[in-house]
Length: 116
Length: 115
Image (tube, rainbow over all chains, first blue to last red; front, top):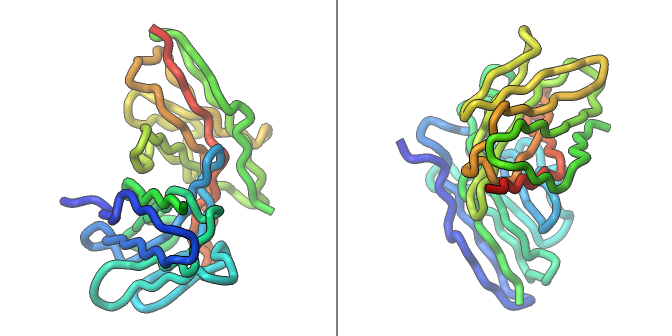
């Protein structure tokens, strides 16, 4: 039973380029979350998605960042025109449902973005 | 606003010694609390969680945590630390309701284990 799969594990981009990070949730999980971890900081919530719907994007920067979770395929976190401050580890998590009964999130190993 | 505070950024203990990692939360209702561990270059693994009931919860790898409402704390403990416990530990509070379904994390405590 594969866990949450993220790719690429490491991504290097130059300023102004686009970064696309992919996340395949655990089998049977329909809820996906993206978190960002900056050096010396904890994980910061970015966005919560279900299939074809963005449920909560309160943690997403207003510009350049977008996320989707299509009916088919992985969830994508897209960062346009990257800047050095976007360098971070981006973690995806999934859960089988919402709320207390399924409170645990299962995390992937992260995608580490470096912007030169 | 809901928040989690982990006052210790780094802790070093000797192998075999006991361990306590502190976590304080700010939340208006009954909190749902978690401890996760992150090994270098890895994702987060759940150690234990508290939703309700017994305030002392047991987790994996010999860890336990005690929920103390009066102190707004959820400290993580282990009676005897192993070298393989060296990692970063994150406390989190779960927010649920309506469209909200997320964890708020503390900034983490990095644990080093001396031989």
